[in-house]
Length: 463
Image (tube, rainbow, N blue to C red; front, side):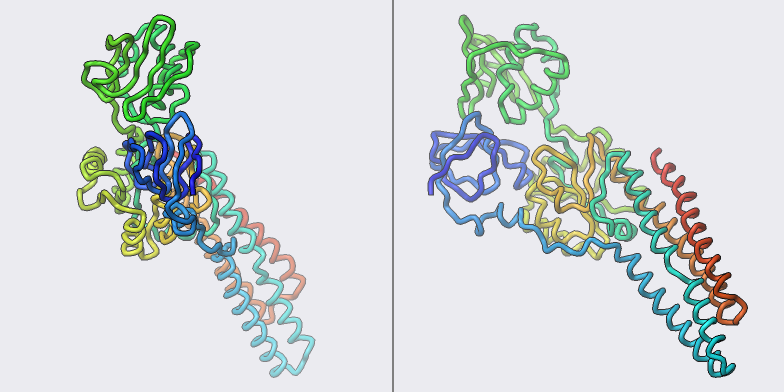
């Protein structure tokens, strides 16, 4: 079947290229940060992104259910959105209270022979031990924690994440798009600053509609400097070489060395064959990645990198972040990532990824998170997602979870102490149902007060 693929869209199934040529981005499916230039007849993987300015023609070679992209976007069976920790506690609590109440009722009726006294004892036990306090206080602790991390740019989707995070000991990062930003970094910003205002305006016009990572980087830098694009004729894309634009008197080229101009660099900008600038690029590592990973390791977490990118790039990243070589794995397919996570995860692994190549691993990881990005696929699978250009939100989430768990322990400790004393007094026959009815809401207020007081501990983790 022949079909047309619009600019910027992913190839849905493995296909053969029918157009004369096209440029594709593969980072979404295998983590490879470099682009692929494909000639006519080349078979293109499912999930590759069309970086061309224009639509391209392809021939489908497989059905959608058999494609890699179909497997990657498939959602696991949804579970109930409930706070299972609270449910388990209240279920156990109710069984114990009802059991104690029944035993007390039977004992008093048997020994006193007075049904009214036995019923009074049973009523006191049931009223004074109402689980309303825990049923409200524990979800409130979750809400306070979620509210705090939201202000830090972290959004928790699954309430059960809070109880799971306390078990996390392994933190696994994808590389491209997770430890790095979507846009590349220009190694010599001075080469851009040296251009004249007219040349910068023309350059911005040339890259304005291009999806290539190099164009995205230049466009972002020029817009940040307040450059306005020049009014030009339509830019022509020469597949595998670069971009070309002709004005009334000039021919402007942006592309490969040798084609755009005789200079060394990843990308050459020239006018009428004269080189105006030679640009070199590198992966744009998140500014705080090294510091945050060092802090996480100091806190006792084992940190790993799983990437589909080449070994030399992953090794360079590992050295930059100070990670041992055996904690960084390269050239991994989506299936290999999932299998690796399955082997290491003993209900103690947090996986942070952003692309379709992380999707299968997301299905098996105990906890999952993703940066919020333009072409996000995993937000609907992740337990949480985070905004911004740094990784500090992950550490703050873990620290907030630890503070929240201390709050939960404090509430449960008070509940056990209060109920142990109050139920004991009720079973002994020394508490009337009226007194029990007064104590019950008082205990609830105290539990809520504990949660509110402990809320201040979340602010410690912000620093």
